[in-house]
Image (cartoon, rainbow, N blue to C red; front, side, top):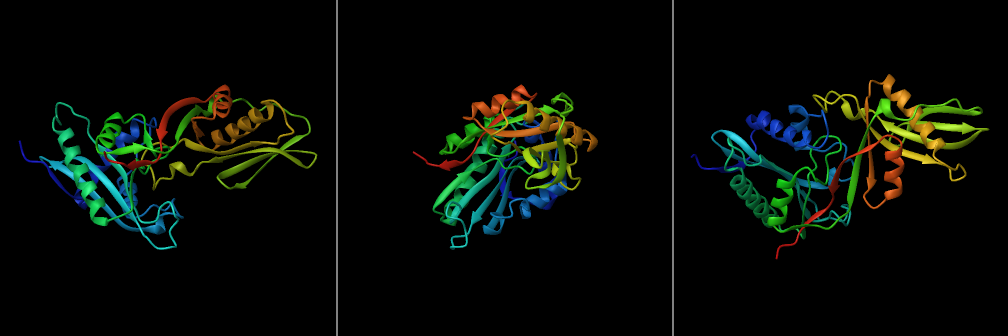
Length: 304
């Protein structure tokens, strides 16, 4: 059996790396995959992270190869130590993502490959001499962040290597747009559509007063970001004025958003809530959402 080799990523690895990444994305979000160009772009910079990305001083991508096949890969970031960097990120090193094929007939040594790759990652973090070491699973795909519960093999590798979950847990929910509440005629209420903070905003007004608004982001499936998975959008914000009681206005806003999303060719809507916010989760499930997965954010290296 040819020896495993851990080495820097080469451009010739791009197709195999994309395939490996998409295998992990597909376990989290149904019907989503990313393109080779998306993966290559994400290795160079993270344009959506417009605050934290400029703080990165070094990026390293490592792969474990056997028999000419990439069986594991990891992407590491080093953040600068100067005062322009936010305190939480200052002088830190991060395993931004770490993926490997679970053991199978064709890849019986994938566990060994993952061990060798993790050793190389920890050695790189040690050479950087950063004050803190973190790990995550921030693949360049919608709703794939933190460490999703769908990757038990990655979780086990992090824990065996001394990483501990020290942050919060979020619930990712999904709803078929056609299954959201249908907007009902509401005398005296008008809905206006404007640009919002997190996508297109639909605001309900009565007598000139805003009763609530919803924002939906339909830019998740831009062709340059995804090869497959069009028809997916994010629920950015959903707010109802405190003077409006009951779920009717919330359902009205969701129905208006559903009408707009269907015209956009979107058939699935994602939402995100803190795992401890049972009220918010129950409101969404009552409106047609179901839990897709849970993801654990912030893993810190605390060996021993």
